[in-house]
Length: 119
Image (cartoon, rainbow, N blue to C red):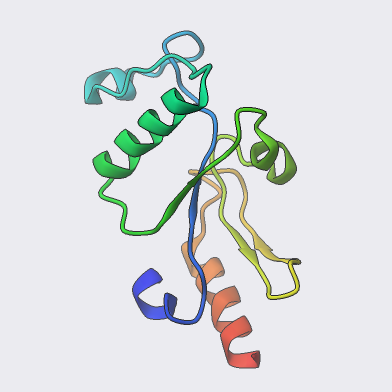
């Protein structure tokens, strides 16, 4: 999707607070994969964890980092993760259900195609 529409649509990953931390709700999959972090309490620690996430997942999409006050997370009900499409006027054109079960990439792609074709 990023490869198909990246010239027409700005794609970003917004890194928010950690969902599964060692001082919160750690999950066995994260332990097996070595993804073991406390909830960052300082911006530079969150940035380091976000960088490790981007590298570990081999992300090619630019990554932005939410403020320590979690403004993006709260405004977009982003935890644990979610897909959004924002139109040129700043309105929500598509919002997925909470991930990973609510991710429906084909719905997001249809919404992107609709915006690109109408613009």
